[in-house]
Amino acid sequence: MDTSPRAAHTVRLSGPLSPRAGWQATGCSMARALEVVSSRSALLVLREAFYGTTRFDDFAQRTGISDPVTAARLAELVEEGLLAKEPYREPGQRSRLAYRLTDKGAELFPVLVALMEWGDRWLAPDGAPVVLTHRDCGEPVHIELRCAAGHQASLEELDLEAGPGRQAASA
Amino acid sequence: MDTSPRAAHTVRLSGPLSPRAGWQATGCSMARALEVVSSRSALLVLREAFYGTTRFDDFAQRTGISDPVTAARLAELVEEGLLAKEPYREPGQRSRLAYRLTDKGAELFPVLVALMEWGDRWLAPDGAPVVLTHRDCGEPVHIELRCAAGHQASLEELDLEAGPGRQAASA
DNA sequence: GTCCTGGCTTAGAGTTTTACAAGTCAGCTA
DNA sequence: TAGCTGACTTGTAAAACTCTAAGCCAGGAC
Figure 1 (cartoon, rainbow over the protein chains, first blue to last red):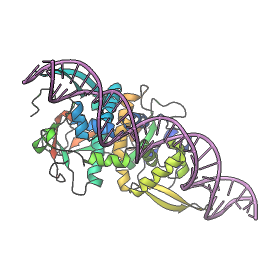
Figure 2 (cartoon, each protein chain N blue to C red; figure 1 turned 60 degrees about the vertical axis):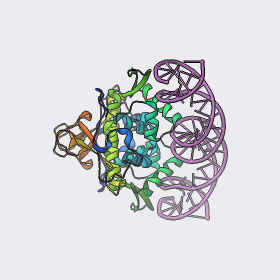
Figure 3 (cartoon, each protein chain N blue to C red; figure 1 turned 90 degrees about the horizontal axis):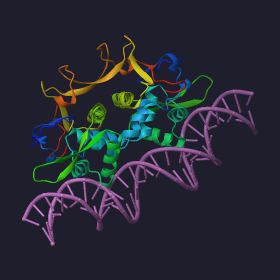
Figure 4 (tube, rainbow over the protein chains, first blue to last red; figure 1 turned 180 degrees about the vertical axis):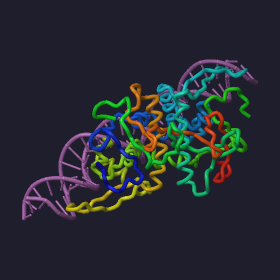
């Protein structure tokens, strides 16, 4: 199937996934991930968490999101296990709450970096406003697609195959 | 600043970006990217485009998005230059429109892969429903953060620095 | 010419996301 | 004890996103 000559900018569907018309992607992992982080505010809050922000007012101010939305988003991200709320006390201060990234939240970092990289390339005519560098060597850091054998892979070199969690007629 | 011992799951802010309170990230590339693709439907449409879908009805059906939203999203993505509309004609058929990824759209692929990978890991208890493999070697493909010198880098090894596009008091 | 199909558009309505402005409340400081 | 501050909550309202259901139009097929 799909013997058409144009495969530019697409992956190749292989095995039971070809043709595309034969299966549904309703429960796909990307769709599930989007249920958790599809709002602009959620990702901005996470950005700040990666920058080290931990306090309510700082999140609200630094993301430019209003207080009510910030509160809602922080509560959601805590409930979903991306952030953890922990009390702490600075000397002479009363007890406060800090929001910190959990492992689950921290592993979203590549998503944010990929978005930033794309934004730098296509939406920032004057160049990247901020850059990530590797502390040891000072070189800029970027996102790569690489296979377990170590080869860098482009979109057109990829196959999409059924995985272990695939149910009949879904993905 | 920020001499606190806990830097877990955060990058280090360096140079003029430290302390965080001293600058605004309002125009950051991630925020700009989110203006374009922050809706669930936009990313689902792009997912299908990467799977090779090109026609209106197929987009609507395969993403599970309603017709009006599909139409709105396709039009937006075309306007933003992520998809291109091109007429084509199959023999014996009338002229149709195909939506294809542009280079700008195709370069969002790492974002989708990163989301999928995260969803596979945290939201798919039975394993990934679909997997991407490198056609040449058959090995699974994943997202990596790597610096220009070739080192793989973890979140905690990264510095955030001012880039060429940074204006005074913004990021 | 009439039917069918692909590619939309329109109408009407519900939910979510967002903002602004103001209020609340606990607990430390003075 | 009166105030201040951080962390929210409440009220109001607009905008965005989403749905279902139905309608429209162009261009082959018959």
